[in-house]
Length: 359
Image 1 (tube, one colour):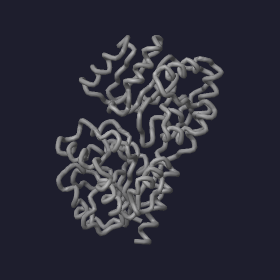
Image 2 (cartoon, rainbow, N blue to C red; image 1 turned 90 degrees about the vertical axis):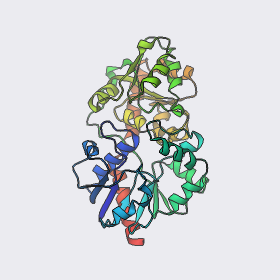
Image 3 (cartoon, rainbow, N blue to C red; image 1 turned 120 degrees about the horizontal axis):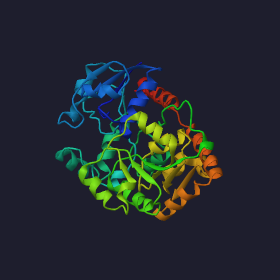
Image 4 (cartoon, helix red, strand yellow; image 1 turned 30 degrees about the horizontal axis):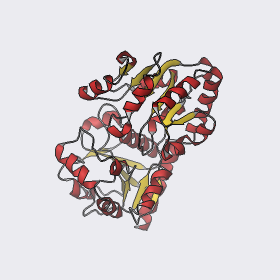
């Protein structure tokens, strides 16, 4: 089977969530099928495995509605896109689209780094479920990353197509941290700085923890950095990495007390599972998706769901007890092992084979 994967959302320097999902899934799926990557910028190959690739137009170009005309000539058996917006007009191949979440119906502000026309289209797209239904129903099957989102897709009747869960997963960790060694008084936040991520609440919690530092790992604009710094009682507690190298990020996770996020909405929460894979406890907002992916870790105290900055600070203080930290670390590690890229790749390839034979 010649499975083409739309890798045009992969970054060129540092992964975001969609980028890491795509690259990791492609690498694992290459063990099971003949993969060809669709890119729009050769620099994307910096963060992709060494596999055959074809350059086509950008997903934000005016040609996107008709991108299938470029792909048809490549004669794929199946095309998988990690987004739901891949153009499908005139396609001659089976297509699997991915809807990660419904966040932007509740929080419609688009990412600031998108071109102005795309930002406008983004807002218009999310004013009604009709465009989403139209896009999804033009595919042969729909993928999503969690049971939580699959339930929301059904609740809002977004598609007549079958919906399959192909979850995120952490990168393989050969050796997790030793829980008995304790932790440094460092907290980690990995994610964007969009409003719904509620980083302001994390900083409010940090203000109650004068002996801790908070590492904010993702790229950030100078204006947003100044805004967040202004909320800190002690700005020196904030460590802005503005994009952190992978090796440094892994080292930080292995030494920190916890990864924290008080997001108001999430489609999955990959940084949460990544932290748990190192045996690092997580402190998360009380959302259905976090309850899903942390599951047994919550039961065994490897993850703590909180609803306020004050509860976040209290959760951090509980982890200062060496016995509590050891138990939390081991529980987090166990829960992370329920997700693997190999399992997700098997789900993808099985789905691709199914749509190829039934179309």
